[in-house]
Image (tube, rainbow, N blue to C red; front, side, top):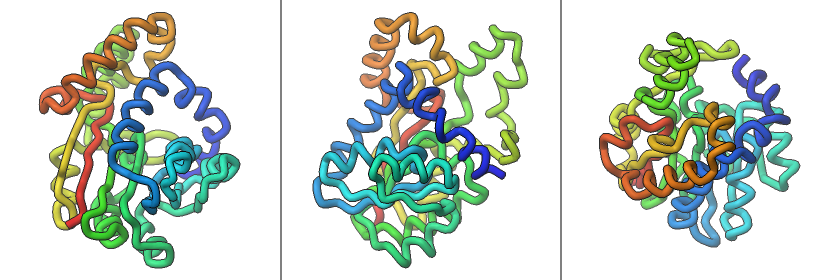
Length: 250
């Protein structure tokens, strides 16, 4: 059911997020780190590739990306971009990697890992898929988001405001979970060491604030500059829409 939900969104995803002002700001921040992490000739495994925007960008830099997503609709759009994309659930990445690996690193952007049934299974799969010394860059939706509390309370939606504080929430027939950065670190600890954790969307508003952000591009740019300066501060990481955790395979 979850894969079908994302397939239904495939044709509109870039219009509703990738090409929005907030989407561009957030993805630019992620790309800055991907560009500093992966180099020409690297072979990278991507989980939850969506429409293939990240894989396509890395490809222009000489990075070979083998992309996967559980949603056939997303994979179809990614392939239309020339991405080497395959239908595969993140929980099944171990078997996939056995046939296609090993890899120099891994990537999962913008909350794909929040949708998996068992993050521990994914961690073990990546532990076997990524060579020692390889880096996994994982962008995960966090549980404490003041932007979300304020926005939805102002719009009279208290249930939506505090949805991430519950253990999980249901969306289009699938379960979404919001692990903290500390919890994710523990889950990957048997195979990976943390090299860097940083905030994405602590000062920059979440994507559903796009109507406001589009009308105030200077403010959005200013918030992005401020966020980049303090992105590694622990309190900032703890209140971000997403956090990005960079892991080094032992």
